[in-house]
Length: 233
Image 1: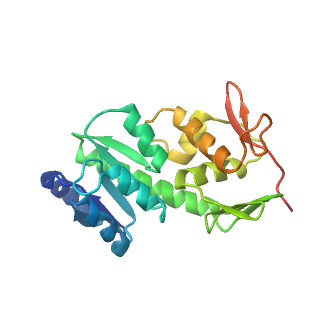
Image 2 (image 1 turned 90 degrees about the horizontal axis):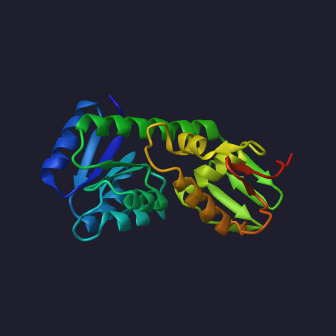
């Protein structure tokens, strides 16, 4: 039996019960809450392996819950939305969501996405190992998920950190936006490639890398991005 615990944050009881039924049939443990304010308390006490998060909730909506969770955790989050909206997906991904599913959805598809997101999360941890990347004034501590620039800690959201690490692990290698989506968000992510541009822009702003000649992340026009710099020995 799998040891992962899935937290379901959903105020429509029939949906929550259906999701719970299918996940438990696959061996997952589950917990659920229907109230947005209660959700954060449940998350902190439970420390789940993954969160299924509805957007429209009483007390506190899914956007704010995702934002608060990302201040303290990189736990995978799959968001549920009642409409097929590119704007919703871009906002959610910007806040750190890992995947989206539009209602009504197939419970089997949701289970498949849960499995895929968990596999991807484990793979990232395994690939990163115990590595610390250093490029002069920039230091990326992968196990601690910390970034230090000029001796100052830089706070990155989960996907910003994963994207920076993917690029920095391969300095000089040009990544297309599609390849970065595949590596950082996974094969089964159906979002728009422009979410990569949004995340790169935010990383650059935080690293003071918005200049004519960037220090760290270089745009390769018509292709994608590459990381500049040589690893410290």
